[in-house]
Amino acid sequence: MSQPQPVFEVLPRDLSAYRHGNVGIDYVHRFESGKPGPHVLINALTHGNEICGMVAATHLLDTGVRPLIGTLTISLANVAAYESFDQARPFESRQLVHNLNRIWSAAELDGTEHSPELQRARELRPVVAAADHILDIHSTSQDVEPFWVYPAYARNAEAALAIGTPPAHLVMPSGLGSGTPLIQHGRHGQAAGNGVGVVVECGQHFLQSAADMATGVALDFLAHFGLIAPRTAARPAAAQRRYELLETCMVRTPDFQFTRPLLGFEVFAKGDLIATDGPHEIRALCDDCTVFMPTREPIVGREAVYLTRPV
Image 1 (cartoon, rainbow, N blue to C red):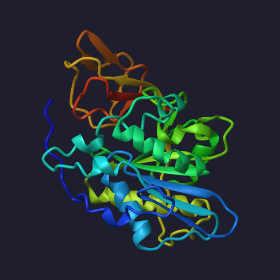
Image 2 (tube, rainbow, N blue to C red):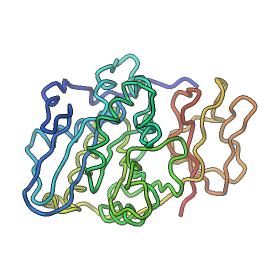
Image 3 (cartoon, rainbow, N blue to C red):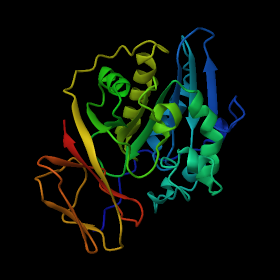
Image 4 (tube, helix red, strand yellow):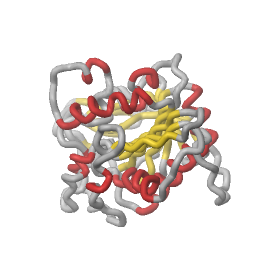
């Protein structure tokens, strides 16, 4: 099913001024308070066309945000993919070769395969490992409400629920199902760990609302851990909604198609047909089966849709 071109409210900007950080790794900036406290990493541009994270990260840098306690690190991850952005093909700059958010296992990082994303992940490995708490900022191809994504550890839920915005949560009891994301690298992917690792999906890639959400959540995340003072603007409390990931469905054939257009958060009854994929069918696994992040353009080997249930 063909998709209309997105609305472009926010577009890439030149990031060359941020290239030379202060830790010997391009596009990584670290600020130490000199006082005891947690080390918090704000990571953006894991995917090159998810521009909201760039807006949030550069806001922190441009406005001179500095930690009151602990250490703040700000990183722009996949700038190479970001720089390949073409407004005529805005979704192709997500990655150059590998999905930078699926290659954070020790086996892949220590392996012999090479790509721009693997090289960058290996460069960023000590940055991610050094952080106590990680916020990885993302956005979606479709215009849907923002939501958290995190492994089903109590420490992650406690932080996301305390921050409160966005109010929707996608909880992964057994990982993502299609690779190892950045927030599950090393100790952050272990039940016995004590560091928070969460993704925030801020809305559609190129909307100003997504950039505003990314910036607000980054500031709230830092305030939650005491690195900055809380924002003074009052925000209405919203009812929190949590969804458990049941299955990550991959595109298996070039014939993949949904039975109807999907944006995300659509609900299906148990057994309802959601998509066909050549000879394969994707059906709802339970009543109130809620879909997350349905692919905009099916590509064999990439994620098609995430099936969840409300909890």
